[in-house]
Length: 299
Ligand code: PAF
Image (tube, rainbow, N blue to C red; front, side, top):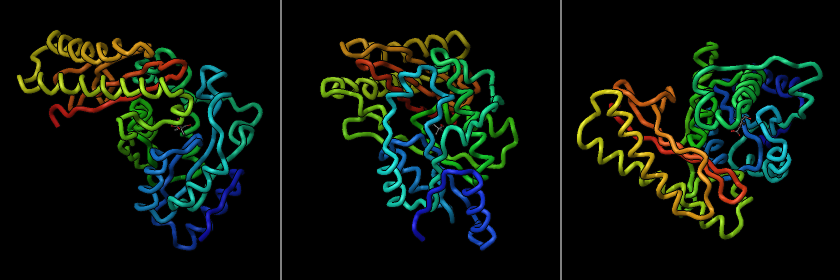
């Protein structure tokens, strides 16, 4: 069937309900996006299409999750090309609503979370995760997917969405998908188009910093697990220090944070941590990039 696009909630719901009652509803896979699609998004769509009967992609540039309006204004907008990419990757339905459709006048309910939203990117972007959770919660109610697909590149987003689903008893399976990288290691991101040639070369420092951190962590893990909180803190400082040294050596990079945390809870590492997440945010020129790698501890 050819791809169909809907810009109203009622239109999308009507189509989904018709397809479900026609018996095609064994599984609805959902990929929420803000558009400007790249190979990273497309890998999510392909996986959703392979694992479900109906694949829905939303393309909605969510104003609620932008702390800076300049960031929202400069976000690339490529709707027609996005729809073609979705079609080629096996999407059945694209939902591309207006801001007014998602947030009608007077809509003022928000999803707020304490804890993992306050660390990493939450420190410099205090309203960001409430904006993400609010729109993802609304989209889940609209699409009612069986499974929803998110990139591991946005590790904090993935962790807080998993927590929201648990905390609010939402009936959707959250599937994390591996980060897709350019040949030199740069994680694919809609923001990469803002990098000029020098900045593009410099941006590989995030990948190199993470690789250095994971090597350090691997060496330390080979010498046995830390025995108490102060040993975990020392290990964390050593690992983040080795990543920071790589970033500091790149003149075009300004580091916002380098952190090593428990990959599930985003709390400091400790004896009960099953995996560590090393996460970086840095500006290369004016472009803010994030990246992370996960390291298995007791899994
Ligand atoms: O990752 C994104 O593109 C966005 O944060 C999301 C999940 C589509 C919510 O707007």
